[in-house]
Length: 59
Image (cartoon, rainbow, N blue to C red; front, top):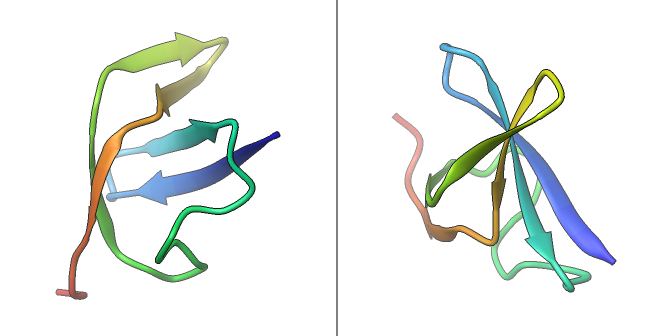
């Protein structure tokens, strides 16, 4: 069980994964967020597990 979202900041895609969760408060399609954590490579994909995050207003 995990929540996986795909972030795109224009420089490339990043999978953000929260392990052991069915939902993450405030995370829904279209929300803008800032995530902080260690980025690893899973095959060709960049992935961040269990990051600290902040929901931010759209630019």
